[in-house]
Image (cartoon, rainbow, N blue to C red; front, side, top):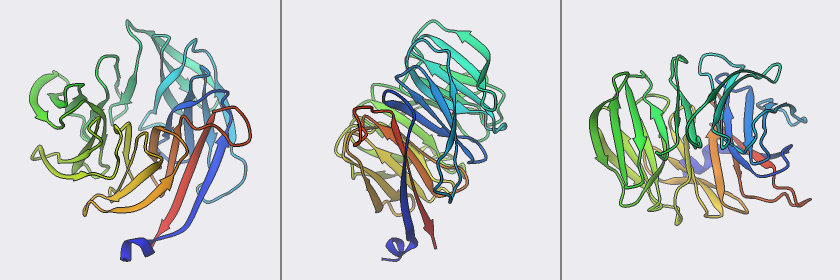
Length: 290
């Protein structure tokens, strides 16, 4: 009962700028800008006021020749962003000017990308489902299609552990901002929570019925959002495993990400805008906790 009362001043806002569906959303390190990557071959950077309701200003990042499938911000610089595209390139951009500062041609279609927490390296994956560093950057995680999470020592990439995490492919992974846990979302519709020091599963979240596509911890590490083809996004308490809120949605979700400073959740999916045939929509859900 206490938890339900803690969610107050709930609000949701919709943003449209892309011509086709949005694959990925990500906040910068200060929580003031949100980037969105789309099938329309562009990324956009939006300046978001945490508690404002005015129209967000956006800047377009143009140059990719295929869909922008994932993007991530430099964790140490609020205006530097990396994008990964089906055109087999990774590009680094300055979000202030919208200019591409570096480009790397890679051998395969880049389905995921992540920054090392100190901002010194970017990892790009084209054969594993999702990748992540721990908070200290000395461990690297790979999720696989056979239900395992491979744990490697970084930078040597020496195998440390293979976790039999799920009975089906592991699609996504997220590191809790306190560094205590990581979570894994799977095709078996479950989200598992792991103690990072013990490498033991401590809890599962069971509300979704379809393969889990995307997960994210909020900035305090108290809540986890997970989404799939279910017509809601589940928000659960990390410590109890209980659902505290569900955000209704009209289609499968591709990306959810909490703001690093506020209880604002950005999310995007296969959703068509109700006013037009365009799909280039993402939304931000917010609440205050007492």
